[in-house]
Picture 1 (tube, rainbow over the protein chains, first blue to last red):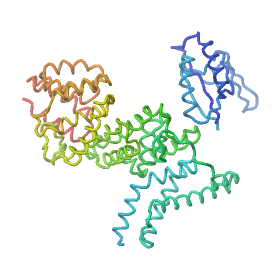
Picture 2: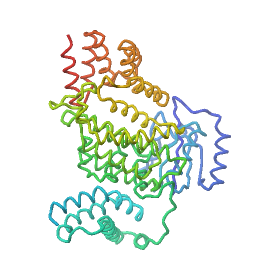
Picture 3: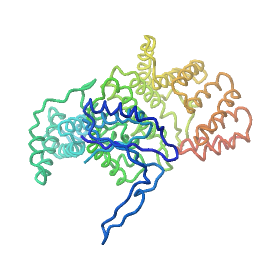
Length: 107
Length: 413
């Protein structure tokens, strides 16, 4: 079962910025234990562009599709046998990243 | 066999076998929704067939077999639309059973799945009452004073999440077991409390359907996890509270506080069973097993139910137990209840000082105001007492409690 694991940061109360070494070590473990599928940190939401081409021509808008205090700071994709395994890893991930984590299954 | 006997046999089978049938089918088909629907169909078939055919010698086996056939029928029907391959897998399941966790019983897997921490508390309650307790959706909706459609949606959504997110159908590993058991016990205690302290202007003050169901399910967990001290503690606690429930509401529907209850009308059998469980846990504590909060709460209730008269209550024992509980759970509600014991030992003035310190945290909690009102009344501070009763009446949701508080307020001089 694949899970999208989102790292959620909070603009008004951001997590600490020195987490990269711990995250790298955690990633090594995810790879070694066979859970790792993909991981990536995201640039600031200000760098996002939204494209809507459902009408006659594509419309580009500068910025994220929804402005909110909380935003997606990075993602993992994990392969885990069930939600209990994913939640246990996510609990560790939250400590490692010093941020909230959302776990959501792929269809 | 006459109709009454058959009806009783169906009711008995429903109580004894519902969870077993749902649990066995969930394991076999890996789908709560299929298991629930097939179990309901099997019981409906029993209601139809047993009066004519007679009650089968092994009702549980009959129900499981019937439900399994219903489930296979449904899967065949659905698979005609989509996946033929899946059908073969579902119907000819020769896979060896999954490796088991600490304890092997399908009903335990079912309970742990329904009380999974990834589900909201209200969802856990509803799902447990439906899947393990066998209550119908309308019954659960009535119990929680919500619309049937809303309750149906909540349960449907929960089943969909369990499936989509793959919440496992498994007894947790030994290391996770204590935390997961406390999640199950919290669900059962909430069911019990909603029965015991029923809220709402049109509800009976005590909902025996809910308290009885909570006790029945806790007995089941107790049978499945006989070594767990907190399970024993919660069962004892429920029994000792339930034993007093008829004495707790007067004929006119007013709450009767502990010191005014007719102790002769307490249920002696429930008290004896509760005391047996408490003694069992005291022996374990003496052997060095630290008791959890339910065991301590049960012990406090055992002290109360041991006194033949309120004046015989061993308040110093009650206070010692509360002191132990405060160390384990420093919540303001526990501190409030501790203050009631303090009032008996050190007087209402000392207790009031302790209660007043809780104002920040408990100002929206009606027992805080009711306790203050009572202490102020005992200190002769009628005006302040009246204000506290007003506040308590305004916040209380239980009809018997409101009636009692109103009378007490109106008796103030």
